[in-house]
Image (cartoon, rainbow, N blue to C red; front, side):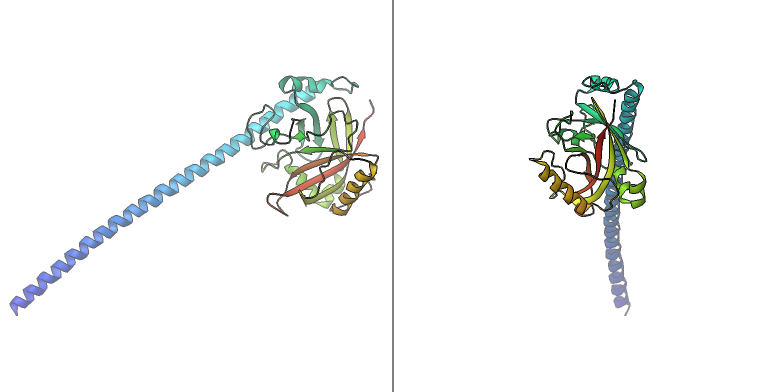
Length: 274
């Protein structure tokens, strides 16, 4: 019996020793897993923080840039001067020869220069100084002529930025009360000044060719107007005919489609008297 008890005691010791070794191995493995998870979490946090700071810095730079542009534009004693470039645009043209206009909408942050390139992609991701930027620029469709001599549809593009800048505030027009209360757009070109009377706002897809700029005849333009009136969320007493010019403000929208969705605001243009 003594011998059996000794064998049993030895067996128990061995079992306990084995279990202890396994426990140490398991504990060590858990520690390594915990460390890996911690390192991964810290890495993700640092990466996210870096991206966030990069976005915030981009927003800040864009706001500072727009403030500088506004200061230059409004500092000049600006009056329409026929075929001569208006004084307010001269300091801007010294910085960027692509400047073609300015747009302002009361009740929004929209108060920006308009540029134009040889395509509709250059300023999509570049700022006033051609630098890479999430905000891009507010830019005129490359097919439009800044003189607007034969233009029926003047198309202007801009991004929607989360800080409310660029064309984000166009979303305010989705509210019917805002649509009815804020009906005027100030649109200036290098040579003339126009007032836009808002008459349509809607969310659509790129399959609707609302950005058509040239028309074979009045009937074709009238067809676009009919489609706009069929699509707009709200209507008012602004009458637009095939003899008028309109301005189309276009930006992204995600209600109908993440990639092809668009938010559109349109206004009837009337040239101001000198």
